[in-house]
Length: 80
Image 1 (tube, rainbow, N blue to C red):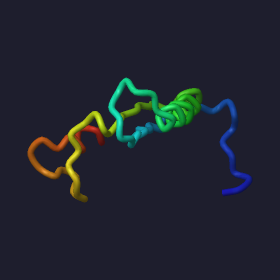
Image 2 (spheres, one colour):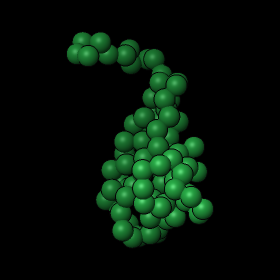
Image 3 (tube, rainbow, N blue to C red):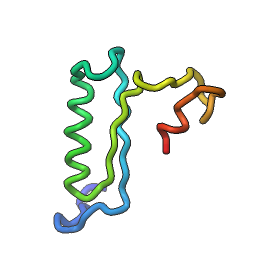
Image 4 (cartoon, one colour):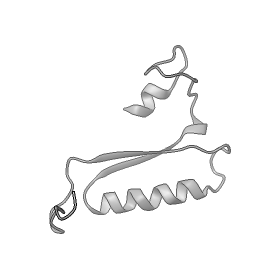
């Protein structure tokens, strides 16, 4: 809502953010998507948010729409 901003001295203490970087090449290859995600996460952390980043290509994430797509699916572990 416009005009209802949080005071600058008030930290975001209940926020946690996970940046899922979706690219085709695994680590340690440079990624502009990861760079952007790191900038966003740094700003959230500066305000007290708990942040983390995961490159999805580095995990065995099965295709589908369920929380757990079966044996070997690492999606549910990424969500935690």
